[in-house]
Length: 244
Image (cartoon, rainbow, N blue to C red; front, top):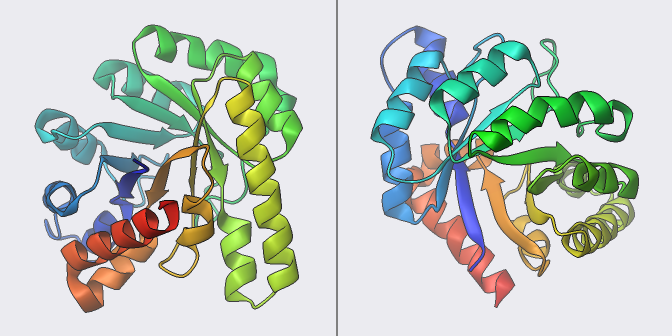
């Protein structure tokens, strides 16, 4: 079955807007589990704009689902991951001025550095994932440096759909399909995520090599209207329908 990882970052974004203890990301994670999530994703950014160190402490101490810790390839983040040893670590590009993660990692251009960086994480028992585009060079480099997983960036595909640029959307989808096939052929587990909605998740969920989708912002936004339980259950239904 195609797995759903629920990203709870933006529960923390709402909390931090007022500096209150609520809404609590751990409570959201527990609700996500009850609604059918298979894992929880949290991105500990260098500027701590949403998820905090205390959130990671609480998630690691209380979660029964696997935690996927998203983080930049910095010494600080490596030390945090090695201290907590989450189920999975997803290395993402990060710029302080960006609103959200823009594009994928340049693994091919930083192969030696990333190989050295992920080795201790892998040795500590974390499944290491690299958040990349569908460029074959990036996928091949990810396999060479020993990553277990690649997460394909679906942001451009979703943006094109929102903008009504359907030719570009379909071209991007074709690239994701081919990227998933290549990654799978190289022994990499394939995940996908970024910007997915009820309307865009189907074609991605239908890619047979994709084993997991990580979805966050849309689910938290939709929960304003139908509740977090309802949003997750509807996303799960869309995924399962597409996969069937």
